[in-house]
Length: 362
Ligand SMILES: Nc1ncnc2c1ncn2[C@@H]1O[C@H](COP(=O)(O)OP(=O)(O)OP(=O)(O)O)[C@@H](O)[C@H]1O
Ligand SMILES: [Mg+2]
Ligand SMILES: [Zn+2]
Image (cartoon, rainbow, N blue to C red; front, side, top):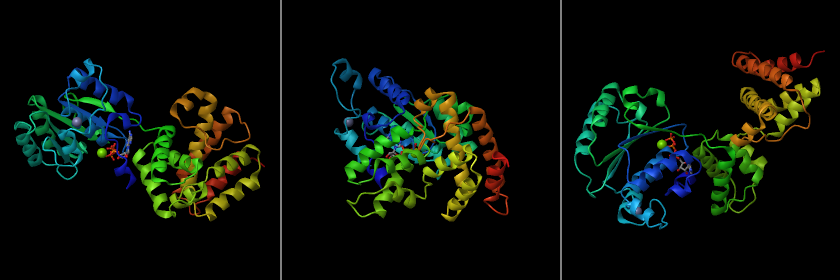
């Protein structure tokens, strides 16, 4: 899988999450690492990756000395015995626990015993607890006890996609970092690099389609690229149509066309497009959700182009017609309503057809 092969090994390879990287590097430079961190945020955005990089860096070198001498080295170095041990999964200083399958009080008691023993390498002993929100109440209480008086050589890195499930008592003992969804521009860049290295000849438009579809999760984008790689002969150029076909994505020109028909009051064409989409095997609810996202971007582009640009969510296939903001709001309301109706409608296209009728009067 490409996402394993291209998992970053040092901070310079991490995409985005600048606020996290800067703070962690700062802690390494000043030699002042905290005892407990919480990495929270959406899936596939670098939590486990950065936890491993930071854990490795803690036992790699004394970066405070290196920085004072103005030497440049990658953080961590990935060459010293401590780094190699982590990279080869045989480090005794780094303990990774999946709280989804080790969620009980016994598991945390074992962890505590291990935490009390010094790190074999003489440096830090680091515990990464993934999916930490899965711990039972008792297990959380036991963990809290350790966090209240952590042994000097121990660092905890907790990771979760569901920070709201972490008890406030635990939250108050950790330094919390909120990971962000990566924007399509950032995803595109990394995909481009991976495709290059792997000699996957996918068009820029194809990569853009993947970057826009992954909802900010870089892992999902890399999994999608793996699918393309597996489904196409090596070395042959891959078009955006093939990408859409293989990944089951809706071609973006459908949204542009649909919008144009609505804006021009072309009822037959709009209804025709709904049927074309349906016959192409596209789920009407999926189509509606994506069309709402398209409308939202058009509206955002009108109201606050700066916000749209900063989010990196450029409008794919901008429409040739211009429509007033009020009309966009109306479309958004009508299609949002249609989307909720689709689930229970006896004919799945009907709510979309009704939306068209409502928007374009006789
Ligand atoms: N910020 C990033 N920079 C570079 N690559 C990334 C980044 N985030 C994710 N990836 C890619 O996605 C893969 C998975 O990332 P990672 O395991 O760190 O995600 P996660 O946030 O821990 O997700 P989950 O919540 O599902 O555990 C990595 O191996 C890497 O290839
Ligand atoms: Mg993870
Ligand atoms: Zn090292």
